[in-house]
Structures are given as C-alpha cells and as structure tokens.
Image 1 (spheres, rainbow, N blue to C red):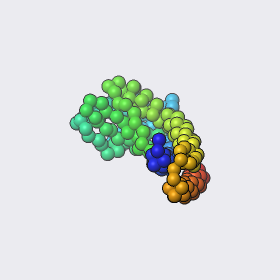
Image 2 (image 1 turned 60 degrees about the vertical axis):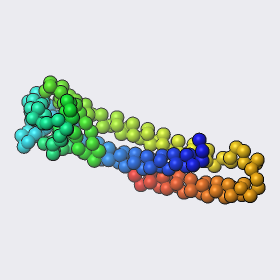
Image 3 (image 1 turned 45 degrees about the vertical axis):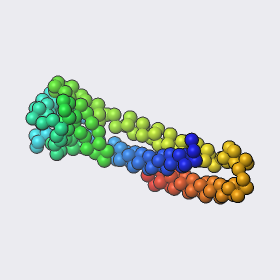
Image 4 (image 1 turned 135 degrees about the vertical axis):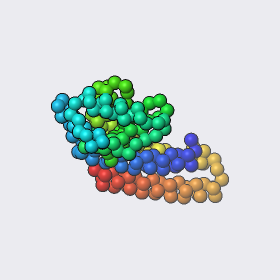
Length: 195
C-alpha cells in the first residue's frame, strides 16, 4: 500500500472514530432515557391511546401498518419506553422505528405478540449496541496507531534514490509524522470530551 493510500485510510479512520464517539454518546443518553417494559411495565401510546396489554398494542400496530402503502413512512405515531416510534414500510416488510438520540429498528410481523417482542428486543439490545460501538472505537484507534507507525517508517528503497529526492522525501516524511502526532493528540482530546 502506498503512503498516499495509508494517509487517506488514516484520515478515514479518524473520521470514523469521531462518528463512532458521537454515536456512543447518543446511545449512552438513550440508555439513561429508556424505561423498562418488562412484565407489567409495558406502557405504550399509539395515536393518543395508551396500552398496557401487549396483545392489544401489537394488534393496533399491525392494523396501522396494514394501512401503509409501500415505500412510505409515518411521523411518530406513539411512544414506548420513553421514545417516539414510527412505521416505515418497504416493499413487502414494515419496520418499527424507535427514535432516540440514535435510531433503532424492530420488525413488524403479522403476529401481535411477535411484533411487541421484536420491539422490546430492540429496546433491550441498546446496551449490546453500545458495547459493539465501543469495541469498534477501540479497533479504530488501534488501526490508526498501526498505520501511523507504518507511515513513519522509511521508504524501503530510499537509500537507492539519488541524493536530492531523498532530502525532499525525508522532509515530507517529517511533516507527515507531525500531522499524525497532531491527529493522535486531537483524537485523544475528543475521546476525553466525549466521555
């Protein structure tokens, strides 16, 4: 891989890390917002009607979804666990969209209880998603460090080049290493402020 490709990938990883940090922050906020729906704790509002029974809530969702035309979405139609929800119909399938700081999806099916189970599973999986994104962020940082080391290494055949181009390559390598150090410092500061 060329130095230019490495530099581009390093920049892309930095942008991915920043996006990932933003997502982690949003998911953490959603975890603080989420209320329990376990057992008798279900409280779901659909079109100004509150449901505590899973079967009735599921039937109402299935009925609302049946009225949607393909490739349409609704505005928020209700709420569950502290989050607004809407419906999104694709060609054949309909998804429930949970709107927090981050967006989550559940599958709507013909079975009322299955629909509510899918919705509750999506809500319960928020902490798993947080763990996945934190793992991704660690991986981005590790890959950035590895690429920065690789960029800092001298060109394999550098000693075989004429003396004048060597000098320009060295200065280019030095300026690249300075940029990498600055980017690492900036990424560390961003991760501290995100937490």
